[in-house]
Amino acid sequence: MTTTEAEREVEAEFHTTLDCLTWNVHRGRCHDGRFAPSRVHDAVVTELAPRSPAVLALQEADFEDDPQSAIFDTARLATEMGLVHAQSEVHLRRHESSSGFCGTMLLVHEDMEITARFVLDLPGHWHRGAVVLEGVWNDMPVRLVTAHLSRLEVLRLAQMRTIGQFIMRRPPMQTILLGDLNDWQYWRGLAFSRRVVGTRFAGPARATFPVSRPLLPLDRILTDGAGSIEAIEVLDSPLLRRASDHLPLWGRVAIRPVAGR
Image (cartoon, rainbow, N blue to C red; front, side, top):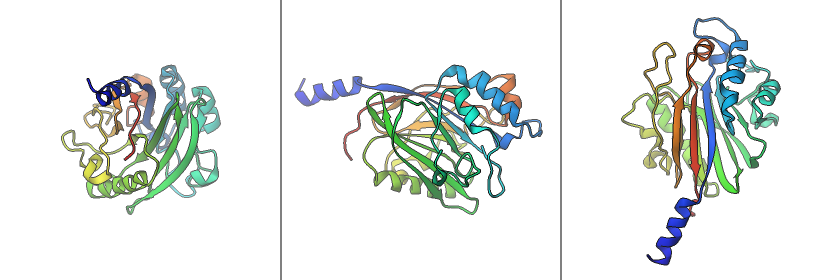
């Protein structure tokens, strides 16, 4: 074995893991049509908190109409999850009264050393946005990108191209993409390909929508670089099914060193 091969083998073995959760909480509108944010809160605390995730991404976490005010008690939610709201600064939210940016909210473990935070406006008639966080987890650099993408493929392609162009201008590090990515076609994933993004995002597809009979893998946890999704699971319970029209998705992501692009 050559020195280079040995270095690659050691590099492949050296990694840490990051447990992530993503959930579209449907603006507090339950599956039965009732507006009951307390159901979402109870489900998060009862069903998600025991998983002890280091990352929790929520979509549709704010009201739809301007100024897109918060639906949930963000501080209480973060405390009960044992996480920190990564968008405490006003410029990282749609409005000072919002919890997220275009409804997208990100909570992370307090041990994650955050080095940079951004929000990205994404193209499309319906205002969409992405939240980007760069940091260090267990001495490994990692980038988190969470978004709620369009249901139209042509717009998803444009939105992922925007995200990809941003990533290519940033320091090289493994990126985790998670959220309601609305790519229901198991066999395609064109929006996450190298041709569109500049890096290839990959990960298992699991059906999360609709809760009454999950058929479509709208919610995803993907990663690029040398990393991989070590485990993936759709969380399901009567409480979760009553709280939203999506089921939450849990994933364990392997984070490995990434060579400079």
